[in-house]
Length: 347
Image (cartoon, rainbow, N blue to C red; front, side):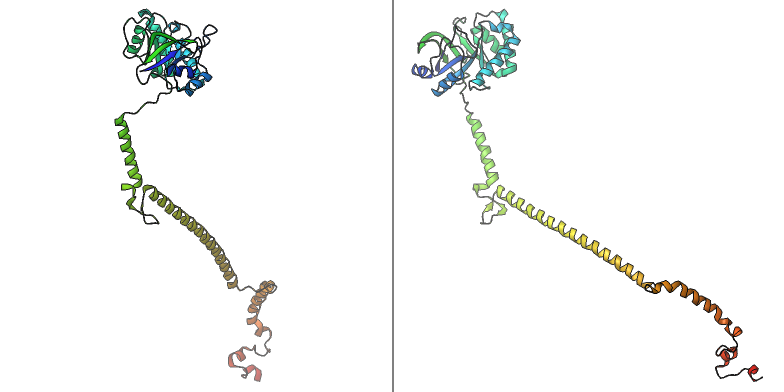
């Protein structure tokens, strides 16, 4: 069991609280005005408490019967309370206790539950707590509107709510000149900001087994690598990480070779294109050489010469008729040779 204080008339300070034998405080997140100058928890006070290892628990209370205003009030107060917690360095995953600081009747409970439901929309139901006498906190816990209970001896008779996390006693004491109410915290976790939960031993063992399995998969049996993954340059069996690194290196080499091959193919395509162009030029040259054209300017005579040749070929058979005495054009001479004489010649 741990012992703590609640105060509104002033701020005793962490050193004085620790010297008085207390190690936690329940602090308010709303201002109390001039009548209660020490009600609101401030960032500077929170720092001082943490410095002296004093745990902090959050409470919201504007007026004693504020919770009777129902759902909208719960939403508004939860938002303001969470903002103050965060401003003072607190955690959003820790509960805030909302106060029903009067003798609650069963007829009041629906509105109180509605207020808590509104607060849950901001904090989450797991972080909603209630302060009050035995009956209102028990009904809120039973209905699931609150997950945490801070019971006061006032309006409780001699009945104890076994699920309560904090107990406000009738005892009071003055610490560093400030009148404080004395509290008791029975469970290990009673909603304090600095609580760090401990895992179940079975869960810890299960986690350790998983971690060992992961380690074996990564580094092999006895942390000596896996024989089936090959060996490193220094002769050790490769771990999974070593094998992955080697595979990536091989992929890099393949990619480099692929790049070189693509470049080589591109070069070959260029050379083939050039050869195709050269072959086309050679074919055209051969085609030009195959034609019986004369070089310029003699090529200009090709047409007229052909015409004259044609005409001469037509005239040649007619020459003996027009020129009978021309040597070499007598028909008989042509027939009998150059020394033969026709009968007409002897006449």
